[in-house]
Length: 69
Image 1 (cartoon, rainbow, N blue to C red):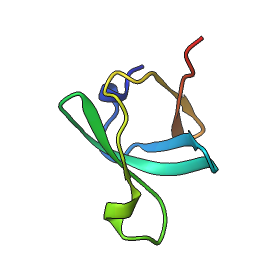
Image 2: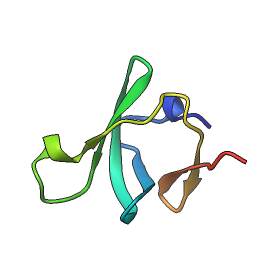
Image 3: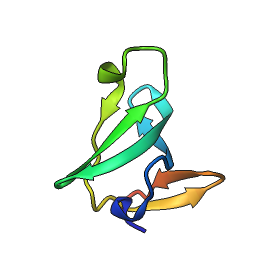
Image 4: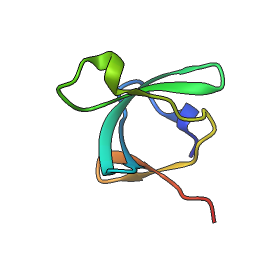
């Protein structure tokens, strides 16, 4: 499944340099997505972008990125 197949509000788990973080998918904006990590910081500081064609798979209420093999 591709990121662009997800519905607004889908929950994501994303591996970062500081570990696994959770966030929310909002929309596809051209070639990239608009997503926001959970947290207390201002929203503008929690925004992240993934490529629209990123492979994801469902995992317990969240979608996780499928690592390329």
